[in-house]
Length: 118
Image (cartoon, rainbow, N blue to C red):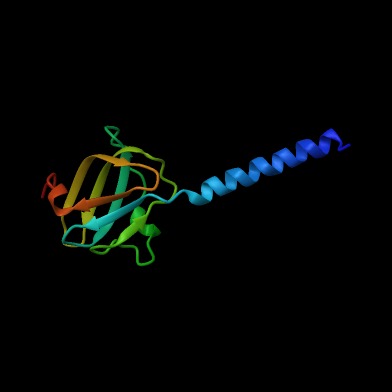
């Protein structure tokens, strides 16, 4: 008869393996640049908070999100955000109510760039 400590250890290993498999199936969140210009600065803040974080474009290999490029978001929780976007052409825009969901690809399109004071 197996000792109870071996049964507990086996259950712990099974739990760890099932958690690891579940996490492996989760696709990362991404931002897809569908504007007419390269994004050189992208910052997120919990919606309505005005507490913008670090420049997420620094996670890209060339530190920019080119037109039609997707940026994988690292260390960002799902939720509702406001975004500050600075484009290579000089435009600085704020988007409100950007909904990030696990595995989702959220596009930023030219039509979304309405709040761009000069």
